[in-house]
Image (tube, rainbow, N blue to C red; front, side, top):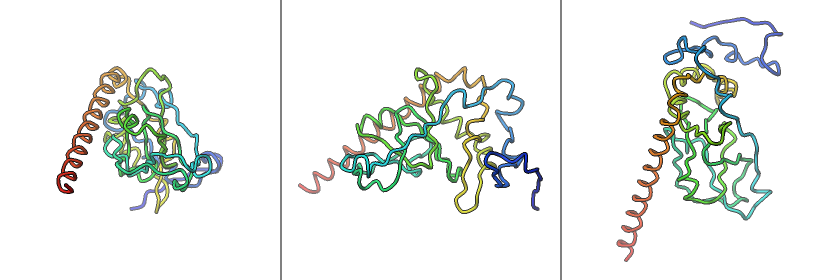
Length: 228
């Protein structure tokens, strides 16, 4: 059964957007941790800013090397990318620079749960400029002294994912509008635990990077044995 609603032209969102999903009441459904908690929360946009700068390596630095992240590289809260660095001339399209300590959230097909924290371990391993697809929203902390790693498990939680699912617009390439993300209420109770949760997330990613290093070493040793 179809769900219908009506609105007037003067109540359309910015730039007279006609996407019906933009006006669905389900887009703002508050479930689970959000139920009755809006009075005890702060909107996400008070904690983060969205980085919107872009770079075109093919024009600005064609001989330079870049680590290029696509949405498929955001896996269960972490960046998982083992590809070789790419020459600027081969990057192919405009990208967004990504600093360590930021959170990447894909606006495309949110049901794929492509959310990740760019940990220092990943950045230090490459020591090259890191750029990503413009399909990512890049969240940077308003307070540079406070990590936002704690946001990763929050954004991957069932209540938030349900909000994202109801907010997708379009058919073949469904996307989520930035306002859905930035208006999310972050419970004060979560903010009280942010330092400890961020510490655990960062420690978990450090362990993952160490596992990657060990496995790479094993692979190199086996290659040497087989080749020798």
